[in-house]
Amino acid sequence: MINKLFVFLTCLTLVFLFLSKDVNKILAYQFLINNIDSLSKVGKKKEYINKYRLLLKREKQLLEEKQFYKQIYILLKKDLQNLTKKKILPKEWYNIKSIEWSNKTVKKYLSSVIHSKKEGKYHLQINTYLLNDDYSALVTQYNLTNIKNKNLVWEFSRTFRIK
Image (cartoon, rainbow, N blue to C red; front, side, top):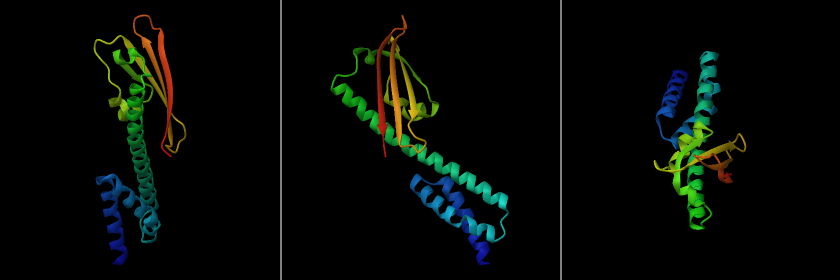
């Protein structure tokens, strides 16, 4: 009876993991990882245990990614504000027509920081690279080109570290 209750509570925790906010997901994830071996002792099939492990691992990766890009978003926004305040950005920066991101994931989280204008005359290409696989730093390379003649007007690189 206790074993069945444990399995039920563990499955309930798994459901809670996928439906809850980030902090609760971390707690639920840690609970399941700590107790997932006990599930195999109460008769759960090995394939289900491995399936849960993979789901939990992927969920943890997505959570880490989301938290990382939230922090990078704040750093990037502050950096652009400082560059504007110190007048480091070129005048062409305020006349961007199109923005191209090298990474779809980065675009999803950071695209709202940089704005474009319909009547702009310049194209901004933003190349981004994770410095490490542990989501500790992001390198950004800005290339601003004239749309008409394709000449590079300005380039700039930044590294954002969170750990």
